Amino acid sequence: MTITTKLPLLCFLLCCCYVSGETLFSNVTTRSFEDGYSHLFGDGNLVRGDDGKSVRLLLDRYTGSGFISSDLYKYGLFSAKMKLPSEYTAGVVVAFYTSNGDVFEKTHDELDFEFLGNIYGKEWRFQTNVYGNGSTNRGREERYTLWFDPTKEFHRYSILWTANNIIFYVDEVPIREVVRSDAMGGDYPSKPMSLYATIWDASSWATSGGKYKVNYKYAPFVSEYTDLLLQGCSVHPIQQLPDSSCAELERANYAVVTPQRRTSMTKFRHNYMYYSYCYDTLRYPVAPPECVRIPSEQSRFKDSGRLKFGAHRRSKRRTRAGFRTKDHLDI
Ligand SMILES: *[C@@H]1O[C@H](CO)[C@@H](O)[C@H](O)[C@H]1NC(C)=O
Ligand SMILES: *[C@@H]1O[C@H](CO)[C@@H](O)[C@H](O)[C@H]1NC(C)=O
Image 1 (cartoon, protein in one colour):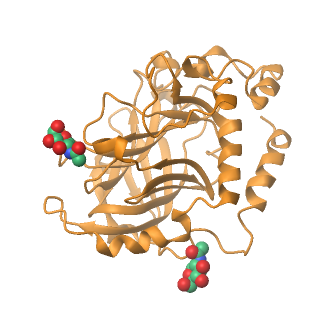
Image 2 (spheres, rainbow, N blue to C red):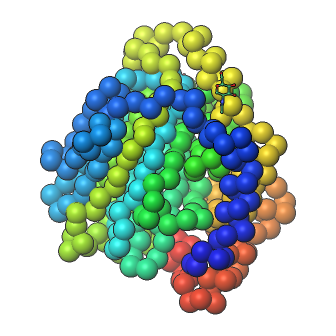
Image 3 (cartoon, rainbow, N blue to C red):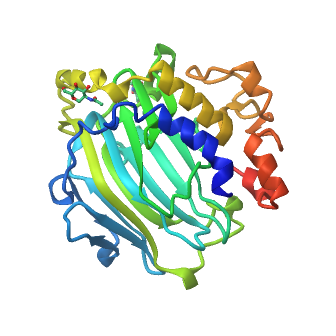
């Protein structure tokens, strides 16, 4: 993908975001690694930067690695600038997510960014997912590509979770919003969660459904993090104290999808989303309650929820460039 083909959207996304020169998350205080997080697993494979705010996570043939927020939060904004491993990364998964799976084994909640590595010369893809109260048999996956190369520079990835909505952001662009409804019931995450960042070997499924495994000839695979932001309401994991102080979060600028942001979200989804559970009518004949099936959008997707071949404006260009192959559509 050349930069020229991505330029129009890039301009569109940037122009509508940097109006005042301040960024959407500039009021959120950054937190040093020391203050907010701790090493989760992977022995020597978590490497802290000298600046106190950066961390690198490594995957080698012995282990992946990860870190976790020191507190649990009931509602919050969880955000980091990240740079993904480059070169050959098939089978590698870099995850940035909130979960309480360690506390609630059977009824856990989870909000995910999962970045899926790829074979040489092919781009990273990623998925977002939402689980509530152990709804693991009702996956809510969406899959996308990006308008930039995530291995070249740092980009910000953020998960906002309030009592009313969930928003996934890439840089300043909201890419997905889940609005809480009564019909969702317990499927809307509602118990305190921790933030997790991990890198691990997902050879069995990550790339073309497991066809391409991690090749440790290219190890270590290094994922970098900096400027971690966490604005949340920390709570005791079991007592789940009232979250009145969290009203501040709901009032934050970034908790609202303004009309302008909605336009950039729609544009992103039109250009970069290649699978949505909402359009997967084989899996969900009746759409899950939070889904809004838009006829014009639905016509671009097959019953499997995957984009029809050629339905992407972008993918047409890429087909001509000889980039795209079948495995791209595998979910
Ligand atoms: C940051 O805080 C200032 C002062 O409270 C406020 O005027 C401004 O709108 C806030 N910016 C964002 C992006 O939330
Ligand atoms: C979560 O699941 C448990 C066990 O199935 C159930 O007892 C509880 O009522 C559920 N909570 C919500 C909020 O739906």
